[in-house]
Amino acid sequence: MFKLLIIEDDTTLFNEVKERLIDWSYDVYGISHFENVLEEFTAIKPDLVIIDIQLPKYDGFHWCRMIRTYSKVPIIFLSSRDHPTDMVMSMQLGADDFVQKPFHFDVLIAKIQAILRRVYDYNHEAISIKTWSGATVDFERNTVTNNVGSIELTKNETLILKQLIEGKNTIVSREALIKSLWDDERFVSDNTLTVNVNRLRKRLDELGLGKYIETKVGQGYMAREAKNL
Image 1 (tube, rainbow, N blue to C red):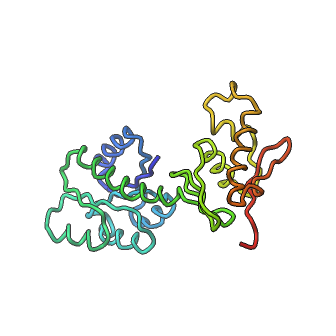
Image 2: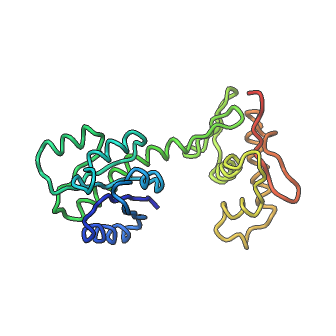
Image 3: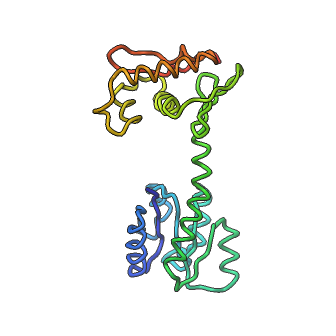
C-alpha cells in the first residue's frame, strides 16, 4: 500500500480527497502543524506528496524546496493559482506535476497512478536483482549468473532461492518455504520441498554454488554468503 501525504490546510478539501484516495486503497496522511511540515514528512516517509501552494506560515514552494533537500519523493502541486509562473516555479523546484483547482478527481488519480507506476515500477526492477556469493540473481528472469556461466531456474526454484537469499546467513524454516510456494500447504508432502531444494542445489552446482545452500536438519535451509569473494 502506497503512503500519500497531503499538505493542504483546507480541511474540507483534504477530507474529501483523503476519503476518495482511501477508496483506491492508498494510505493517506495529513499535516498536523504547518510550521513543522518537514518534521512530519520525515516521520511519515510517504511514497508521494500532494501539496498546495498557499499554506499557513510558509508556502508550498518553500516546503517543496525543503523536501527536495532530503528526498526525491514524487511531488504533485495542487493549487487554485493558475499563473504560468506558478507552474514553472513548481517544476523548477523538482515537482512532478501540477493540478489546478477545481479539478476532477479522476484526473488527480490518473496522475497519481502514472507517477507511482513510473517511479516505483523502475525501483521494483532494481530490487528484483540481487547479488549472492559472487553471483547475480535475477528473480524476474529466473536466472543466476557468475563468472562460470549462467543458468535458468524453474519458477519454484527461483522462489526458493529468493526466500533463502532474502534471509541469507539465517535459517528459513521448511514451513515458511512451503507456504511461499504452495497456496494450501496441507496437501503438500514434506518430501516435495526436499525434492525441489535438491533440484535447485543441483542446478546451482553447475556454477559452483550448490554448496552454499545448507540443510539445517529439523529446522530448514540457509543460503550462506561465500566469504572472500
